Length: 464
Image (cartoon, rainbow, N blue to C red):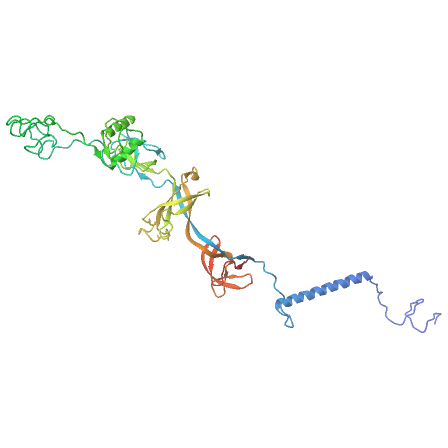
């Protein structure tokens, strides 16, 4: 030993003062963790453990793995709304396309002959007493009526001579016996006589001398004035003449001398020769004021029956309705017309065509065409309130009509219907049960329902 002293333990040659070693391996020094940090870590571990437990429970519940036969947790409450079964009237409305305008143009029955010298502008309105056109510079005038002009109007000629005699049957030649044969008297005070030759008694003033006929005109002169023409056409014409302000006659079926005088005054106002007679081509009758369509002739051309067309002055709608689905088109049926700007106006069916028009590709007048389109019939709809249409004269419109109607029936929103597994439809009550129903008319988002378990006021679910 070289002056180094140990306590009986061999060392590694490292001197340690005040410290004894016992042959153990030296370890790294331990750092002490403060108390607050330890508590935070403990809480973190607890929270993580709790999350794992909750997640496991949730998964087990979802998979139906709960133990001990415990009941499943209650389902969350439904958020669907409920409505009551109500009693109402359902109306099925259908829309079809139509065209606004003045209707089909009709040819004017022009019967004048000659050259067309003036025509009105298309769209012009012509009223009673106005000129429709001029032929040979003579006006053809519009009058109101339904009976067409079929003959000349004026005073008739005097009666013709009796056939086979060559003389007027109302004229007695000088020396002819009085009516009634020989021995007839002209009157109690006539002074004529028979063959006795005694004045004032039967016989003639002188034997063999004929008695003078004081009532007979000179030989060959007719005794009657021109015959007054009669007929409904006379009454129609005289009604128009009086409406134009020409008086002095009785409006009836007789064309008298008073009518002649009034006609002459009317002809003078038109710049015509004052004949007192009305030719077949001088006037044209229509039911009222007309709107001029298009001209079928040019100025300077010979007039024809299709020289001019016209329409009424009221705007109307024409619908080409399917011949298979035109049961709604009945005269006086009320409809709603939606104008091009969306405004609705009330209309009424006034006429329905009785002849179907086949679409292109099918000439049989009915059924379907080659493209599947059905034959159509024209349906005319009038609009009473013409002001409601505004300035619009033509254009496409939509016509809405009532197809079917169910009054006082049980109804629910269409969204409340559910499909049943066994087929058909049903309703889910607010208690979660299902009842089968029979559906009827669908209209305006609602449906007619019926069934033994359906009653007014029943609460049913409408899925969201």
